[in-house]
Picture 1 (spheres, rainbow, N blue to C red):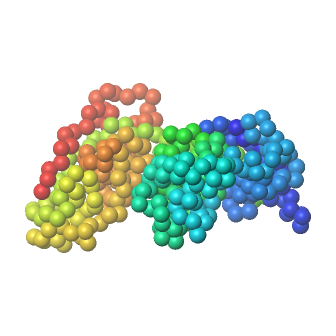
Picture 2 (picture 1 turned 90 degrees about the vertical axis):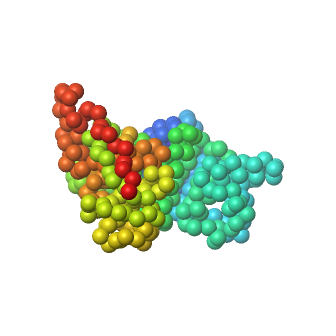
Picture 3 (picture 1 turned 45 degrees about the horizontal axis):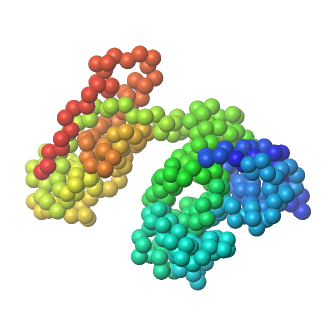
Amino acid sequence: MIRFDGVTKQFPDGTVAVDDLSLTAPTGKITVLVGPSGCGKTTSLRMVNRMIEPTRGAIVIDGQDTARMDQAQLRRGIGYVIQHAGLFPHRTVLDNIGTVPRLLGWDRARTRERSRELLERVGLDARLADRYPTQLSGGQQQRVGVARALAADPPIMLMDEPFSAVDPIVRDQLQDEFLRLQDELDKTIVFVTHDIDEAIKLGDQVAVLRVGGSLAQVAEPAYLLAHPADDFVADFVGRDRGYRSLQFQPSPRLPLRSERTVVLGERPGEAGSAWLLVVDEHRHPVGWVEPGRVGDRPVEDADLHRGGTLARADGTLRGALDAALSSPSRRGVVVDDSGALIGTVLAHEVLSAIEDTDRPERDERDPVRGGAVDVAGEQA
């Protein structure tokens, strides 16, 4: 557990970056610090490992005042991940990951074994082990940065906007990978971001800071969206917070319908629809196609409209609604855990399900709560 007790940081020029911050980051949970520029997020984070020293107050880790701890010992027990990964350019991927274990005196064989294990754990190909950072994509570099922070198995991780320097698709993948890792490892994590969507997705609790470094509100994400403490918090989390809150409501059994499909590389035939769903050989949806534009030739990658998102059958109401609204056909694509097509759903049916979740009593024969229709897709 990390506890901030009345922590203030005032710089020599008189600027107050953090003002009387009292906050607890629970053991094994992700605490996200979020707020506008100048609110003291990074300063607060860097005071935990004493890269910045507090002016007043105390930071306590598992009952120990960090001000009384040896700095080097403190930092070696804390993983630290920053933007752009901060990798050593002259070291290979494997040597970057093994940086802290080597500092702790691990032998070379043990260090390399641990580094290879983490390379796999963060979802990187073992063939990347001997490459240098400049030979990696931005997303791969960030994964190496996370692996390096985990190498000595620290109980605490500090993460300063680690995913902000990559494109939105890679960022979403990194967030999912991070949550998967945390589910396995149960680290105590303090995570800094300026993105409220990232904070809501990742945080077990979210602390919203004001400019000047004072705490505006700390709460679980669902509560924060439903009950902002004041106008500042309400404005910061966004006026679409009602929509965001749908991600905390599990989707009921929706009235899925069968969807006619065509396999990528085959001819669409007589589609009978303005849009036709394209799947691969495993029935994983890969996009939509307009049969009239394709004619009698096989469907190619260049024909695909990939704008729609996918919803999982065991996912959230937000996922289902977004899938329906983002689809060019306005039919939301629903898949199982393996990513295979189950069926499609319309936006108004998801909205009915949202209304249904607010009703105190439900008729078991309600079509939204009842069994889904046969969704064995018909292959063109």
